[in-house]
Image (cartoon, rainbow over all chains, first blue to last red; front, side, top):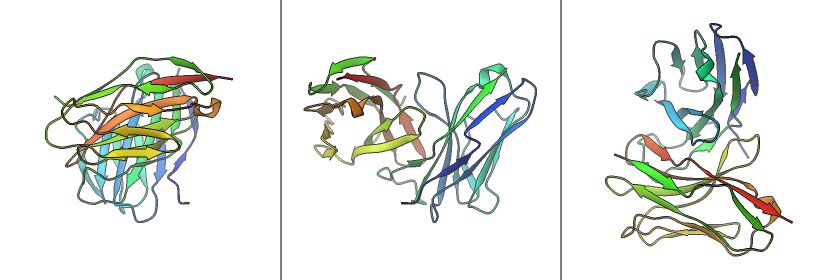
Length: 117
Length: 111
């Protein structure tokens, strides 16, 4: 069964450093999501792509976070500079639908756990 | 605004006990409703879903019924196992581009 791949699984960095996370969605999935999950909370959407276009980045702290999906396949999420409060799990998910249908299932990767010291 | 409220955890049960995790939502329109499960160190997995009022989603012995009149989607299982220990997230997906997740409910099942 196809899965969403993410790397690295764990990342420890010092504040003010740059970090980057990579996600490869399930083949053929048009929609890609990046979520941040703080310990003890539910995932919060950071950015959503439809193919290569951003359709929602309203919760992305754009002064330090950036995301791209240049060819509409894999995606990179970057933080520069990292802050202590960025410590969290970063989850990537994908879904088939290109119209944002409400019944569409999202498939999640294993996540990248970030610790900022 | 849109939101999901789940019962607070942790919920601790003995094996073979009955499980209920309450979930209510506030949403505009007619959302689809989901339960996701997260095992330790892993991402979220879809457990079940319902796309319209009175639909019942079911999987692996878990069930939830979409109650539009009470805006609820409570998760139930008749007999839990140790392997069901995980965090359970209620969520809904509005038409368009938004999924709203609850805070999660941690379940511990003792042998």
